[in-house]
Image (tube, rainbow, N blue to C red):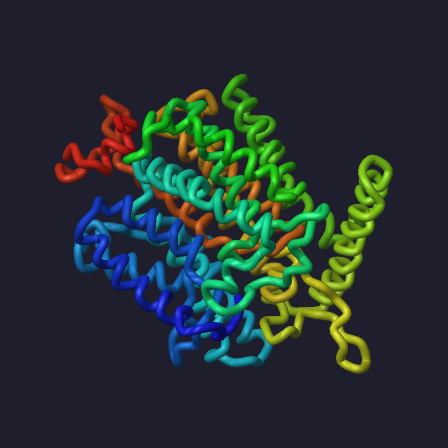
Length: 470
């Protein structure tokens, strides 16, 4: 995330987004507003931060979360205040407060720890809490899945434009480039960045949108028509898939195919063994790498033989950097080295010798064993709950279709962050919604549906959209 820079539109967009979202709360169905605020805010607000003394930096996520919570407090206070924390939320609470203990353990002080904790609450905790309020039931999760699917469709022309002219939209709109354009050059063309942090993040976004569209169609939860659109919704899936393929991100595409295959196989044969294997990949990787049991050379050698020496060299470079960072992390405290670059490796002249690519190794170095365990549990807990509480034969049902695809995507997200550090707070909406629905949801024992307030049963435009009648 870049500091405050660019033209006057940067602060204008971040600040004006808040009253706009609050106004939308007074006009439209609440869950549609919340999902739209997160999706559109993440897709189009600037990749920039503006320092606010005593508060977290103003960013696209801070602006969105504050706007949603303010709108809920003003126009939907009863729903907002009805949320209660549960045992399932403890990992998230501990993860958000983890920076405070890291700072104290390293003698940096309580102020630094509180500041870092506030930033972590914005990125992880606030989206998670919002999901507990608005996406903790089947209709809420389906609304969110549809919003991301539609968001992917909206991004198609922007992606094709940047494939043609190079990543320029952020610079043209906000006055600066948020990413190194050299990292976007792939196979004689360009990988789009649009208004996100990196091309890899856009690729995972389009993978998510494609995944949700395909799964909603497969589980018969995709609306036949979108509002004011003359063609059937299912015909948007092919161009979305084509755009995803053209993102030139082999890792994201590989994870997409792995996720689709795993989820379809699990539901088709009503056997979650492949899903369990997928779930175990991140902790197995973290444990084997951090203990030195596996150095990765056999994998890079296999890639060199089967694919290309260039990709193998790039992967081995990451493994070698991880080795240095792991050795440094082991010398730190149980709570890690804290911030300010203390977890990195320097030579005698103070030159940084390492490149941190994977989120897991960053967390291991900065937050220690305590942090890496908490982050892993926070992300994988929704998948574990789904496995325990819902038979795989019901994963395509109206009640659990969205939850199952979100849980699979969380697994994919965790695997992607073994080698990349693309933190997307939208994924915490998945976690908060699934955890709350599976542990605290109120169910009608006769119909199998959640009890809804009378106002939610009104035949509004939004509910008809969610139900697929439009």
